[in-house]
Amino acid sequence: MCGITAYTGKGRALPFLIQGLEKLEYRGYDSAGITLVSNGELVTVKTKGALAALKEKLAQYDLDQHAGIGHTRWATHGVPSNLNSHPHTNLSNTISIVHNGIIENYQSIKEGLGMQGYTLASQTDSEVIVHLLDYYYEGDMKAVLRKVMSYLEGSYALCVVSVDEPDTIYAAKKESPMILGMDDTASFCASDIPALISYTKDMITLEDGQMAVLKPGHVSVYDGQGREVEPKFIHIPYDLEAAQKNGYDTFMEKEMHEQPYVIRETLRGRVEDRIIMPELDGIDLHAFDHVYFLACGTAYHAALYAQYLGREWMDIPITCVPASEFRYGNYPVNDRTFCVFVSQSGETADTLAALKMCLKAGAATLTLTNVLDSSLARLADITLYTCAGPEIAVASTKAYTTQLVMLAAMMVKLAYNSGYEVKDLDQFIADLKEIPNAVEAMLDRKNTMAEYARLLADQRDAYFIGRQLDYVNVLEGALKLKEISYVHADAYYAGELKHGPIALIEEGTVVIALATQKEVAAKTISNIEETIARGAEVILIKAPGIHSDKIERQIDLVPVHPYLTGILVAVLLQLFAFYTAKEKGCNVDQPRNLAKSVTVE
Image (cartoon, rainbow, N blue to C red; front, top):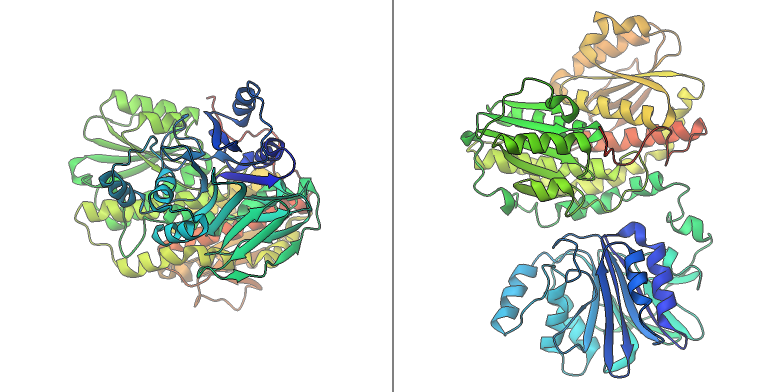
């Protein structure tokens, strides 16, 4: 997820590019850059680091050009560096591009370009685009861009400038956002509405496969066959502050609704008819005596999910331990230990300390994180990256669900590598590919979850119950509710209620129950009915086909493989926590006493 800006007009381009990047910095902040078209040449300035570093560098220049493109990066290929920063230019410095998305077939394109004598300066997937444009360019940029689009597999939003047309911006889009706008003297585009809203509230949303040609005060849009189409303008009724949140009131709500997109990006190129994870090729867990999953907070719940899958599919000892406890317990680690570390930021102090301890003991290490070049990523032997993009709200939503889908794919790959047969594998993979659509369906239940959240308006306690894999999900649901609504929430194995916790159930007590695993669903329903007999108000989230006439509030999940239900449950429980917090007037983005990344012990 990266931020793109572009401008062509009678005014100076740089002010628009920078203000737009400032408003899009939430989309990426490990590097930034701009290209301006200037008297037959391109002026490109870029740097590793936050946008402030670019602004400091630009202060050395006198830049009054009237067309240019800008970029702020959230890296997916190549560590943050000056070379890996966008824009990327061709060798003759006549064409420059910025790109948001992932080019899945960049490696094969890179090899083909190498055979034609091209040498890439960066480690990015994006740079191949500008060299493809250079290779095929014969004076008609619109035609060559359309040709290059046909070669690209994956997702992209592109902006292109060239010295041959100094007043023209070319833009193209597939599965990554691109917004266009114009006034009487200028045209501009960006990855998201906030970059444009100070200049216009009438915008064009480019559709997949479309291309646009921007000239001062004029925008032309073309379909995939190169035919000009009538641009469809939309009017944006809200102000800048709302625009930064895509019209949502809070970042948490925005980030919950980004989940279908970021899950799709995380799975892209990794889940086809099989799991494609070259990082794990050759990893046979039989080479190890023990596997540990280590993480903190929400990431620990994701790790528990991976542990569950591993124990279902393999007979290898697998243990999940909070990283904060691991260093102080008696957990044997040596060169026959495989340790997996899960962290959104890659900087969690407890997890980082546990990794260093395991490295010192000679263990093989793997990190799953959302941040390229983070401390955990640099130190681990193997790193897998999710594509959640920057997460602003403190309570994790999209970072968590992208962890779940990546871990699901990872455990299938490790089971296959280790010679284990995964039951119903074809169905599991097919359903995993459809998870973004299923998550979209869960987000459509927001009104129901808002209604159920009112049950907690005057309550100080809630109880979450479930069995087997559902227990992982009740842990995360209870944590989310505590984090942002300050409602005391406990999570229990449903079968453990009768061993003490049921004493807490009284008239009006809210119980959130999960029954997604059919083999234990009847037992869970029996436990739920015990709480109803004591006056509990129950919310049941269940797989289709599971039912109880005694439970008033029931929500069916979209049918998916039972081992994938937790991803859908997580979304519903995020919504439940969110609307409970709103009901109680809490600040959902910045809950008290919490930080986004815990970098101290």
